[in-house]
Every structure is written in structure tokens, then in C-alpha cells.
Amino acid sequence: MDENPSILNHISIGVSDLDRAGAFYDATLSPLGCRRIEEMEFAISWGKVFPEFWIGLPFNQQKASAGNGVHIALTAPSQAAVDAFFKAALEHGGISDGEPGIRPYAPGYYAAYILDLDGNKIEAVYMPNMGAEYLQA
Image (cartoon, rainbow, N blue to C red; front, side, top):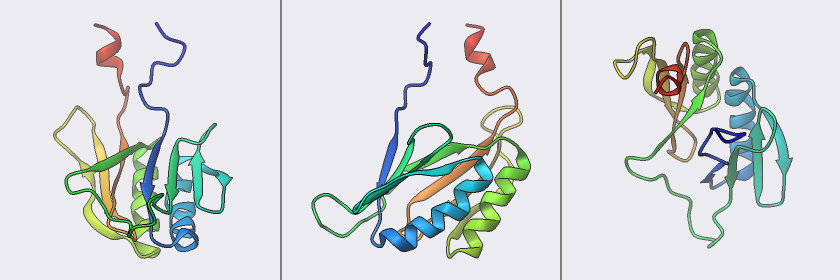
């Protein structure tokens, strides 16, 4: 097995106002155990150990826009962290796209969905024993 079993290295989304979006994500990602890791003139990143989630001004200098049907799911350490993520998002200008609760996707799947300041759909999800069913295969 690979040293790192994750397929993802990082995710990046476009935003229209880097400072405003930075403050939003500082508040909403903190309950998930993430911290701001890097800042550049055109981008900011967060993660637990390394930069996994990036926001940035679009490279082509066009208006940032959210992808229809696209969403990003971030792992939460507990149901309480999902609740805190959702609350922080609403307090900082985000919009509910699905209140915290159990979802039918997998046993114990507890999630909340928000739309950020640019309309990007972000999910926080807590799953007890996440991935255990795949490791047994």
C-alpha cells in the first residue's frame, strides 16, 4: 500500500475577493481542525499538516464562478465539528445548502452543506470509521 492512501493532493477554488474569502474560510475551517498555512498575493491555503485546500483569484483574471453540480467535501473530526462549521459559515455570510444531519450515503454519515461567498458548495462530513469498509477489501 502507498505511504499516503489518499488520491487527493489539494483542491483549489476561485474566489472574487481574497481577503473576504480568507476571513470566511478562517472561521469555517477552524472547527474542522484546519489552519491557514500559506498566503500569497493571489491565493491562500489551509490544511491540517500541509496545504490541502486553496482559494485563489482566477489565473485567467476572469470572474470567479462556482461549478454547477460540483461540491467539495471536507472531513470533520466529529458531529460537533460539522455543526460548528455550519454555524460559522452562516455567521460569516455563507448560505445553508443543507443543515447538519444524518445522510443516507453510508452508515453514520453526518454532514452539512453551505454555499460560500462566491457560491461554491462546501460540505463538512463526519463518518465514524471512515474508509474501514474499503480497507477490508
